[in-house]
Image 1: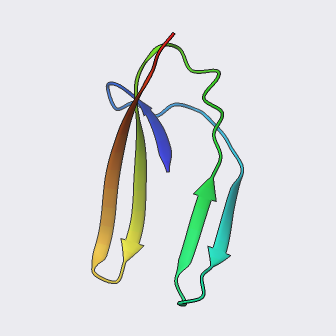
Image 2 (image 1 turned 90 degrees about the vertical axis):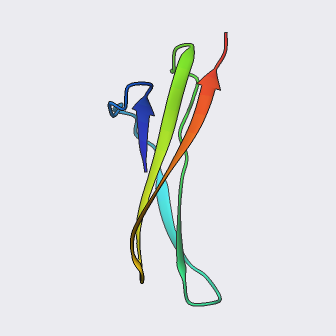
Length: 66
């Protein structure tokens, strides 16, 4: 996962991550990011993963308000 600004540039935001084995044999990863340091504006979270069918990518947009 990466945090991107509104133009798609990656921001240098670090946070703890964890990897977990699920009961069905799949794996999941989680990350925690503090949003407090972000200025008012639009941002994207980019998620990338490799699946059995090939690479997958998702973009999630959000806005920080004053």
